[in-house]
Length: 315
Ligand code: XMP
Image (cartoon, rainbow, N blue to C red; front, side, top):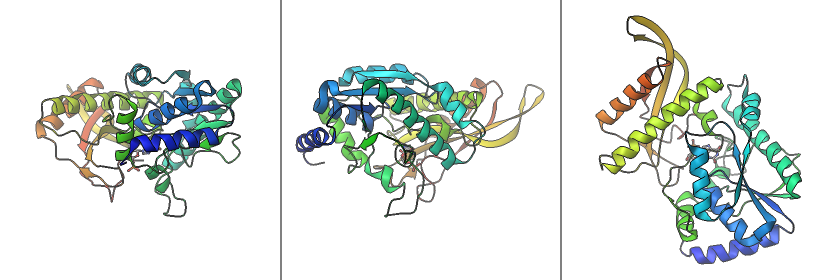
């Protein structure tokens, strides 16, 4: 992104051409969709409505954090509560692609209902180049279906508008800084949320465990960044694994769950390197997750795999 001002002029003109009536904007609180939302509101004014769907698969404090981010960015967004619908759609599903499809479909159904209410026939999304490149198309085999690409059902009556579809993440960060969006260094969080960080069955209880583990990883890594014992990673998170493992609490055997911690460096998410964090940071994370989960998690592992061959998320 050499010239963000020029990009913005062109994007506003394209949005006005592509949205003759009204549009809803899928705003997740991530840097991509927030930048898309700012552009949509600038281009369309009252003809745009931004929606933030509370899927119940969000990180700790996400709703409050996102509200603040939207306010600071000048995005008037409505929160749509939909946790029960997402959990119901995921019941019994373990296959990662099936999870992504069901989440995509549920998002679209929620958006369709909200679009009908607002009288909109367009949906603005913050899809960026790696999302659709990795979702297949003619360039590659499908690695994983990013929910905002492959998850859209063919029969949807909403026409999708993607103002950032040719940008890479580092370019979006330059654009976001230019648009006055705070914290453009915020780590990415996948649209399907904690559902893809709960490997195996997604239940309310397992999501809660993953949420706790993610919050601990975020807190400890952010403390290490502030103390300059770790450079700011690209992403840092925890994944609840689909295995049970024996542990001991007091004098008792516990058959608990396992969590994998991932801390990666990257510039555009197309490739990534597992970082080598200080051992005391990892030990503190393990101790806090096992203690904080009250025996639910009995083992914590550190993921040392680069991308490729692994992807950044587990699912
Ligand atoms: P992977 O796991 O494919 O992730 O190496 C690359 C980057 O994309 C994020 N990610 C997603 N973002 N919808 C999104 O908006 C998705 O379905 C999705 N899946 C992965 C991931 O966190 C990483 O930054």
